[in-house]
Image 1 (cartoon, rainbow, N blue to C red):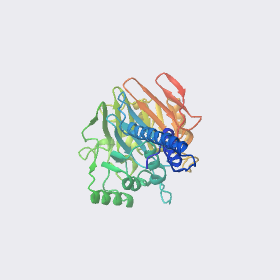
Image 2 (cartoon, rainbow, N blue to C red):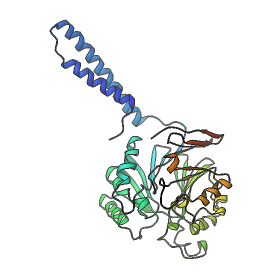
Image 3 (cartoon, rainbow, N blue to C red):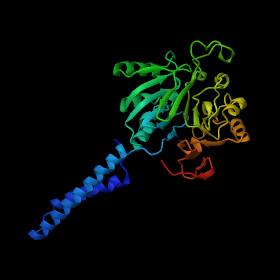
Image 4 (cartoon, helix red, strand yellow):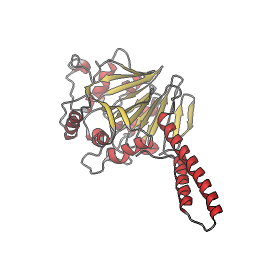
Length: 351
């Protein structure tokens, strides 16, 4: 059920109050008639206001073409919502707790989507088959309609991935294997390009060795751009995966970088960061997590290279807006600060 706005709640309770007035019986007939007329008018007005707000929420015309990216605060996991021109929605991973009973998909990701009035996903992306990225996917598949699913690794030994594949077959939801050889997708003014993993024809030669698909280096890496502004979503690639991307002749420049592998020491090499040259980097990490993500050495590296870091463990959910004119990013937790093309700006309060 979608989360109602404050205006919707006021209109709803206005209808309830009017109905209660209609049911109240007084001795004076003329007074009762006047009250019933007023209550009927109030119920009609509030009902129309409620319907109008719902229709505006569902069908409000778009403004300027924008790519809106939200890195959800799912602890030591990852889930990214992309809102693209044409009211297209893409969810990249859905978080998860390895070996835990808490369902991040059902209790964090799904409520966020409903809060944003999203009931359909055009694409659900499985960056790789690690539980902290796909553990919440079953709850999303059961609770939302999905156009198609993208995956980079269909052969991973994951019980969750096997369940997902069987569910997709049962529901007849297309499963697309995506690699760097896949065609570029264009939605309106936005472009979505897969940078990793390499296709079958190049797996043995890229990076100087055989590509090990069972590790995070096989993560599906996406570059989403609009105009000259772009964001790169890196999954859990580490040094080998970063080395693969450095061999791309087209380059990997982007203003926004989702920090690889939660900021572990085995990722975010200096050459990779310098190749992307991001203005802001986003870290998905759990509060006081046992892995020490992001590692202090990695934090210092980004700071030394002049990159602004936003972290879910400190800033809560992080939102980035890309347009042809520029970029701005902010954390939704109270007290968080943001960054934009014109420098630092106040953060925005949110969930």
